[in-house]
Length: 178
Image (cartoon, rainbow, N blue to C red; front, side, top):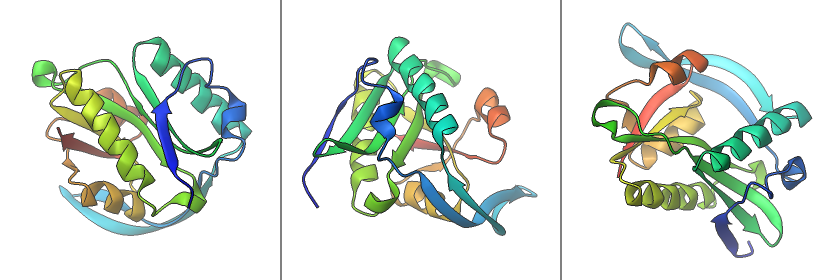
Protein backbone atom coordinates (compact mmCIF):
# COMPACT_ATOMS: atom_id res chain seq x y z
CA UNK A 1 0.00 0.00 0.00
CA UNK A 2 1.26 3.48 -0.85
CA UNK A 3 1.51 6.12 1.84
CA UNK A 4 -1.80 7.67 2.82
CA UNK A 5 -2.03 11.45 3.05
CA UNK A 6 -4.84 12.80 5.21
CA UNK A 7 -5.74 16.46 4.86
CA UNK A 8 -8.65 18.86 5.28
CA UNK A 9 -10.86 19.31 2.23
CA UNK A 10 -12.10 22.70 1.08
CA UNK A 11 -15.63 23.38 -0.05
CA UNK A 12 -14.35 23.80 -3.62
CA UNK A 13 -12.78 20.32 -3.61
CA UNK A 14 -16.05 18.68 -2.56
CA UNK A 15 -17.38 17.89 -6.01
CA UNK A 16 -18.92 14.60 -7.12
CA UNK A 17 -15.84 13.84 -9.24
CA UNK A 18 -13.79 13.49 -6.06
CA UNK A 19 -15.71 10.25 -5.41
CA UNK A 20 -15.37 8.72 -8.89
CA UNK A 21 -13.07 5.94 -7.63
CA UNK A 22 -14.60 5.66 -4.15
CA UNK A 23 -16.37 2.34 -3.53
CA UNK A 24 -19.02 2.50 -0.77
CA UNK A 25 -19.93 -1.17 -1.09
CA UNK A 26 -20.92 -3.19 1.95
CA UNK A 27 -22.48 -6.63 2.10
CA UNK A 28 -24.45 -6.71 5.33
CA UNK A 29 -25.68 -9.95 6.83
CA UNK A 30 -26.44 -9.03 10.45
CA UNK A 31 -27.42 -5.82 12.21
CA UNK A 32 -27.90 -4.82 15.81
CA UNK A 33 -31.39 -3.97 17.02
CA UNK A 34 -32.44 -2.85 20.48
CA UNK A 35 -35.03 -5.26 21.86
CA UNK A 36 -36.39 -4.79 25.39
CA UNK A 37 -33.44 -2.54 26.26
CA UNK A 38 -30.73 -4.93 25.03
CA UNK A 39 -28.75 -4.94 21.78
CA UNK A 40 -29.06 -8.19 19.83
CA UNK A 41 -27.80 -9.27 16.42
CA UNK A 42 -30.47 -10.09 13.87
CA UNK A 43 -30.17 -11.56 10.40
CA UNK A 44 -30.89 -8.56 8.16
CA UNK A 45 -29.09 -9.20 4.86
CA UNK A 46 -28.74 -6.48 2.23
CA UNK A 47 -26.17 -4.84 -0.01
CA UNK A 48 -25.32 -1.18 0.38
CA UNK A 49 -23.75 0.21 -2.76
CA UNK A 50 -23.89 3.92 -3.41
CA UNK A 51 -24.64 5.32 -6.83
CA UNK A 52 -24.58 8.80 -8.35
CA UNK A 53 -27.62 9.96 -6.37
CA UNK A 54 -26.06 9.04 -3.02
CA UNK A 55 -22.74 10.67 -3.94
CA UNK A 56 -24.53 13.83 -5.09
CA UNK A 57 -26.35 14.00 -1.74
CA UNK A 58 -23.11 13.28 0.14
CA UNK A 59 -21.35 16.09 -1.74
CA UNK A 60 -24.08 18.57 -0.76
CA UNK A 61 -23.88 17.47 2.89
CA UNK A 62 -20.09 17.69 3.07
CA UNK A 63 -20.09 21.12 1.40
CA UNK A 64 -22.59 22.27 4.02
CA UNK A 65 -20.37 20.90 6.80
CA UNK A 66 -17.45 23.02 5.62
CA UNK A 67 -19.68 26.05 4.90
CA UNK A 68 -21.03 25.98 8.48
CA UNK A 69 -17.58 25.78 10.09
CA UNK A 70 -17.19 22.02 10.34
CA UNK A 71 -14.29 19.92 9.12
CA UNK A 72 -14.00 17.33 6.36
CA UNK A 73 -10.84 15.25 6.12
CA UNK A 74 -9.88 13.25 3.06
CA UNK A 75 -7.50 10.29 3.01
CA UNK A 76 -5.66 10.00 -0.28
CA UNK A 77 -3.49 7.32 -1.82
CA UNK A 78 -1.60 9.22 -4.48
CA UNK A 79 -4.41 11.37 -5.92
CA UNK A 80 -7.25 8.94 -5.19
CA UNK A 81 -9.70 9.48 -2.31
CA UNK A 82 -9.73 6.29 -0.23
CA UNK A 83 -11.45 7.57 2.93
CA UNK A 84 -13.10 10.59 4.47
CA UNK A 85 -14.54 11.81 7.75
CA UNK A 86 -16.60 14.84 8.72
CA UNK A 87 -17.12 16.69 11.98
CA UNK A 88 -20.01 19.09 12.45
CA UNK A 89 -19.50 22.42 14.22
CA UNK A 90 -22.64 22.51 16.42
CA UNK A 91 -22.26 21.55 20.08
CA UNK A 92 -25.19 19.76 21.73
CA UNK A 93 -26.19 17.67 24.72
CA UNK A 94 -26.17 18.47 28.43
CA UNK A 95 -23.38 20.95 28.96
CA UNK A 96 -22.84 21.16 25.18
CA UNK A 97 -20.23 18.43 25.38
CA UNK A 98 -20.85 16.65 22.06
CA UNK A 99 -19.72 17.33 18.51
CA UNK A 100 -21.06 15.02 15.82
CA UNK A 101 -18.87 12.78 13.71
CA UNK A 102 -21.30 12.92 10.79
CA UNK A 103 -19.46 10.57 8.46
CA UNK A 104 -16.55 8.16 8.37
CA UNK A 105 -16.11 5.96 5.33
CA UNK A 106 -13.27 4.00 3.78
CA UNK A 107 -13.40 2.70 0.22
CA UNK A 108 -14.21 -1.02 0.11
CA UNK A 109 -10.84 -2.23 -1.17
CA UNK A 110 -8.93 -0.21 1.47
CA UNK A 111 -10.81 -1.35 4.58
CA UNK A 112 -8.89 -3.09 7.33
CA UNK A 113 -5.70 -1.10 6.68
CA UNK A 114 -6.04 1.40 9.54
CA UNK A 115 -7.32 4.33 7.46
CA UNK A 116 -10.59 4.59 9.42
CA UNK A 117 -8.66 4.52 12.71
CA UNK A 118 -6.39 7.33 11.49
CA UNK A 119 -9.35 9.43 10.37
CA UNK A 120 -11.15 8.94 13.68
CA UNK A 121 -8.01 9.84 15.67
CA UNK A 122 -7.50 13.07 13.71
CA UNK A 123 -11.16 14.08 13.94
CA UNK A 124 -11.11 13.32 17.69
CA UNK A 125 -8.04 15.51 18.19
CA UNK A 126 -9.70 18.33 16.26
CA UNK A 127 -12.94 18.02 18.25
CA UNK A 128 -11.03 18.07 21.53
CA UNK A 129 -9.13 21.19 20.43
CA UNK A 130 -12.51 22.80 19.68
CA UNK A 131 -13.62 22.15 23.27
CA UNK A 132 -15.72 19.01 22.87
CA UNK A 133 -15.65 16.30 25.51
CA UNK A 134 -17.16 13.58 23.32
CA UNK A 135 -17.82 12.65 19.73
CA UNK A 136 -21.40 11.66 18.95
CA UNK A 137 -21.76 9.00 16.27
CA UNK A 138 -25.05 7.89 14.74
CA UNK A 139 -23.54 4.72 13.27
CA UNK A 140 -24.78 2.08 10.87
CA UNK A 141 -26.05 -0.90 12.87
CA UNK A 142 -24.24 -3.56 10.81
CA UNK A 143 -22.13 -6.03 12.76
CA UNK A 144 -18.92 -4.91 11.00
CA UNK A 145 -19.50 -1.20 11.57
CA UNK A 146 -20.33 -1.71 15.22
CA UNK A 147 -17.26 -3.92 15.69
CA UNK A 148 -15.08 -1.16 14.21
CA UNK A 149 -16.41 1.57 16.49
CA UNK A 150 -16.48 -0.57 19.62
CA UNK A 151 -12.90 -1.76 19.00
CA UNK A 152 -11.86 1.89 19.24
CA UNK A 153 -13.62 2.41 22.57
CA UNK A 154 -16.98 3.77 21.44
CA UNK A 155 -19.94 2.96 23.68
CA UNK A 156 -23.67 3.56 23.58
CA UNK A 157 -24.36 7.27 23.95
CA UNK A 158 -25.35 8.46 27.41
CA UNK A 159 -27.72 10.95 25.80
CA UNK A 160 -29.42 10.37 22.48
CA UNK A 161 -29.67 13.21 19.97
CA UNK A 162 -33.38 12.98 19.14
CA UNK A 163 -33.02 14.61 15.72
CA UNK A 164 -30.35 12.14 14.59
CA UNK A 165 -32.25 9.19 16.08
CA UNK A 166 -35.39 10.22 14.18
CA UNK A 167 -33.46 10.60 10.90
CA UNK A 168 -31.87 7.13 11.16
CA UNK A 169 -33.96 5.04 13.59
CA UNK A 170 -31.94 1.84 12.97
CA UNK A 171 -28.56 3.47 13.64
CA UNK A 172 -26.75 2.80 16.90
CA UNK A 173 -26.18 6.00 18.84
CA UNK A 174 -22.58 5.95 20.09
CA UNK A 175 -20.13 8.24 21.81
CA UNK A 176 -16.37 8.43 21.96
CA UNK A 177 -14.77 10.15 24.95
CA UNK A 178 -12.01 12.57 23.99
